[in-house]
Structures are given as C-alpha cells and as structure tokens.
Image 1 (cartoon, rainbow, N blue to C red):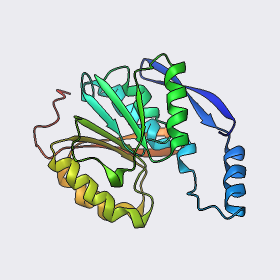
Image 2 (image 1 turned 120 degrees about the vertical axis):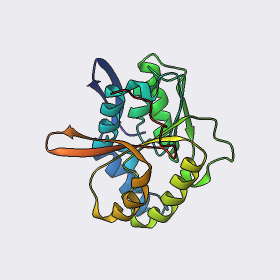
Image 3 (image 1 turned 180 degrees about the horizontal axis):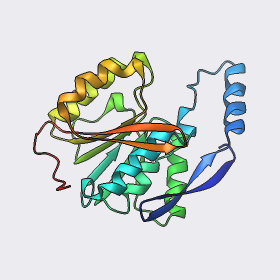
Image 4 (image 1 turned 90 degrees about the vertical axis):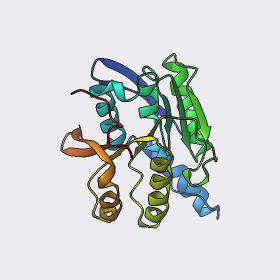
Length: 216
C-alpha cells in the first residue's frame, strides 16, 4: 500500500478523518506495474475527489436523507461519503472494485471509531440480485464515455427497485446524455463549492414523486 496522509475534514457540525495515499507513491507504483507488463487499471480510487466532498455537504445539509436508513456506496474509492454516513445511517456498506481501496477504508473507519462500517470489494457491474438497502451513494462515476451505457442500466435498475440515489458530479459534457436521462427522477438538486473554484452538482433521485420527505 502506498504511503498515506491522514486528512481531517468538516461538514456541517461533524468532523472526520480518512487516509489519503500520497499521489507520487501511487503514480510510481502504477508505472512500475505497467512497465513490467501487468494489466492494471489506473488507481482513480486513490484521489480524494471534490464530488465526494460535495456529496457529504448534501448529507450534512439534509441528514434526514440517510438517518436510520440502510446505505450502499458504489465505486466509493476512499469512502468519504460512507465514513460520513456512518454517523447517521442505520448501516453503511462501502464498496469498490479495488481491494486496496477497501483496505484503506477499513483502516480509516477504525481510526474514526466506526468498526461497524462494512467495506466490501464489489464492482457495480456485478451487483447481486438482492439489494437490501434504501439509499445508494455515487460520486464522480460518470467520467468515462465507455461506462455511460452501463451506468444508465445501473440507474434504471436501482430506480426500478425503488431505491433512493444521491449522485454527485462535476459538470461534464461527456455525461450530458446520462444526466438528461436522469432528470425526470431528480427530486432535489444542489450545487456546492467542494474546493475553491471547483463546484459540483448533487442530485437526489427516486422513481417516486413523493420519495423525498424533507420539509425544507
């Protein structure tokens, strides 16, 4: 595992920390594997993306979205939204296809004093038939044009199953068609400046018109 730094962040009145790999160490490890001929995916999971911070801003402003709910995070990377949700939700299952990412999330959870956070290796293309959750969190997943058809299928399945989705994303022209497809399901939309000069949009989606119960 690459060398890591402990980052502390605050959203609303809650503060938490997480391990973030050193970017130079991650790059060197990736290049070493590529140079010896290994087939390896670029470790996008190892960066703390602004969209994950924006998603936490939404949950801090609208905690009722996840309070006492069963939460699933897909393509979680470093798992920041899962770590935040663990203080509010009934249960949280953090998932990513990278075993290294999930090992780091477990380490962050333990240091935050939330050993009950589940961190499981799972690709969103291979979800089980049964999804015993109420809320699905996704941040910055719509960046690769090749993934967009699969993502649309994923969203259709989650919405069709009656799940409530919170999606955080920067503005990307490549993702316009996917977001256009999702617009009829948007019940709440907010914009947050996750980092100076870097805004993200956070959408709450559900098939039911009365699926969002905030009275604000």
